[in-house]
Length: 516
Image (cartoon, rainbow, N blue to C red; front, side):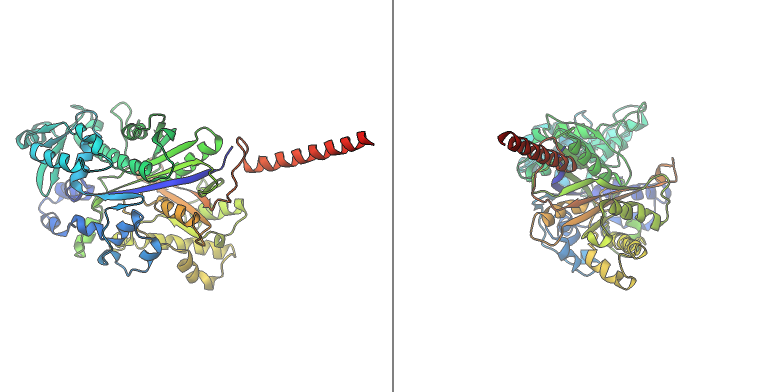
């Protein structure tokens, strides 16, 4: 066996303000319950331009253009401070809505997406200049008139696509009566697929020494479900994304665990690599249209821009030990069991204290805790507080109970170990995964970061099947630089070394006896 390592990560955003208006659950619900509300009438006045999204320091941190240490110095709410607005980073990008509609058409393989003639021409022109998707422009083929599009909304329950307030396309239903293949669900799944493809293609482009054919397995860990009336949520989104990214040697499957899914997927990917089942496993998650503008009414009431205006995506690669990349310590993974209890103390003890005990470590031995990295600009205004800081305070409190931290040092602990939240509230996206790109940088440079804990937590009760809470955690640490012998893990290798040494000594003794 070999130690699994984190080889690379990618982060993407697609600015989709029109999808926020028409497809976000908060806005869709408002149109049903209060269609003449002031919120709906004035919604467009609270939307940000693409340029404003680019200059939001939280977004620049998400795509790894700005380091989290820089973000930490900015006064809240941080979106009011303008960062340098770069579209691309070394690990991803922030894509404008027009191009995202083009990508939506590119990933459609069942003739569900149709674009208006004039708009399609603009999309093709722009996508032809896109380095990552210029070879895919010919896939934008379903083009119709504005009248045809409107008819399909009115008569065939198609879902409209809008740009600058105008109808520019539709997503058709995939079945006349199957509710799991209606146009709304098809749009959600296509957006998820498109944002996943965007992230995985960036992972392939931006990760050193990585070829698409090297990846043998893909785990998709978003919150969407693809299937039909006979197998709702049957999957496999992973393989659908792999197909569009040229992963010809890969198989895959979907993993669902609400917000905790990316950390579950990280542990699963690392375990597959450590076992030797696959040499390289990609984890990918696209974004969610339902979460667009989720806290929009709270932002509106506070005269803020609607900050949940982008579909997010993430991808990362786990592979065999290269002697450089951060090591994933699967043997000390933490888990919230059925019997763990749901109090904050019980949760943090199960997810943080127990795995540290197995590793022979203390809470102060961890340099970074990445737990639910939601952007506080979004959550504080909605009454949910600063989620990352609240989690770190609870971890510190567990450290006090374990007598590893003095109560008087709690404030210093939070200041020293804390990293600010910067991730969009796309459900699964904030769960531990936003730090992985920085973890690679921190642990392959001369920084003083040597060990981090990635924690994912999930609210299983949302599915109305159980009242249980959920969570898992895993430690990532700096690589020692030693690459294991093929087929031999660290503990077994020491045994082999000892046995070989013993045999050599015995041979030497026998040889000496014969000489005498």
